[in-house]
Picture: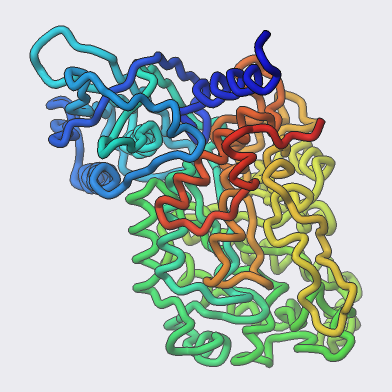
Length: 564
């Protein structure tokens, strides 16, 4: 009679082998076989003659960059998965060697806009009838689909016995994203992040098929962006005006680097709240500057400070500054902020009190509406579409135009409220997708303090978020995507990757693959998902990413650590 342990071991080996190709995020359609190919030492990437004939210079640059990155993986990456190394065959039929991947692109689209076609089809055969090298094919409508297909191809490869192997062929993959906006927000104002760390983050984002870097680039604590119109903003508002700033050249470098990886850069310059850093150079246009010690009456966190929305000079400031800032960025969307304004701050500002006494038909809310609408109009004149945080629609009920996009960071009820008003929405609930939660209080003298959004968001919690929860099919059409967010009160370059990975990967799969599986059941963080994410985490670590472990290695190898 077979022992219980041996039975469990057989089941385990079957379970692991069925998940050996730990693709992340999961493709929409994927059929695989049972054979193994080796990768030829002379493996090449080629595009069809039809593709060559239609590509423009920009598209060719994107394609060549992607090809070079894959070829670099083929020569430098020697990934051996702790999950699957025992079942990769020790001997390989040398006749089964993949020699080429042929790329076919239908259009020469080179502008990375919301809604661009990112689909691809990857076919890897097990054999070929003629004497030519065994060839795989990658087809896509645009070069951005090719980028995703090449990243998928790189995840199919495993290293064993000094050979680069491609197990479980044939592979037939047809893939596309469920959401057009798949973002990661990084706050680079509370703590400064050098450009090199941002570029590394963009690399890892591209492997996870994110396509938007939401750059929360300024805040109350610092203004690191160098303005030519108002140079003192960074001279006096940055942590260091020489070493902790982002110049126009730096921003262009980030944008160009991101585009080669299929990622859009959307900047956020939050106004009128979260602007204490402006007070360092222009206190005359500010309200409630760094009120201490009871800052809680004037802001959600220190230092307090908001633009004075009653002063003509404030409007002169935004009319001069915003066109410059929008010119630094190429994307068609611009995040104008608008979150967490403190009404008491304005109610206690003498110049605003005086203005309201002279204008009895006005209120702080009508002043706020004027400021936000004027800000958005400046953005539109710069040929960009404004994005705003939910507060302007929900808390203040401002009559904003329907072309804007609203970012919702709280509950599903707020998502439903915003879409019911006809606005497009970006989701990212603090109950699920806030990466800074659960690390204790960062304010001083608070022995038993916790973060405001406790508990810590595990990968399972992140994976369980459904952007469509509670919405009708029609309402769901207004959800253009979502973002996972890292506010950096307790993060800087020393622990950035620990905060981001692999938890952000869980959100990446929901945004790419969708919250429902092929049988239209809600995705859950089950054994299959854990096995794939664990393997993907190991592969990211092999690529020098400081991604935190999900479990002890014993659990990762056995799959026997679930709750009974």
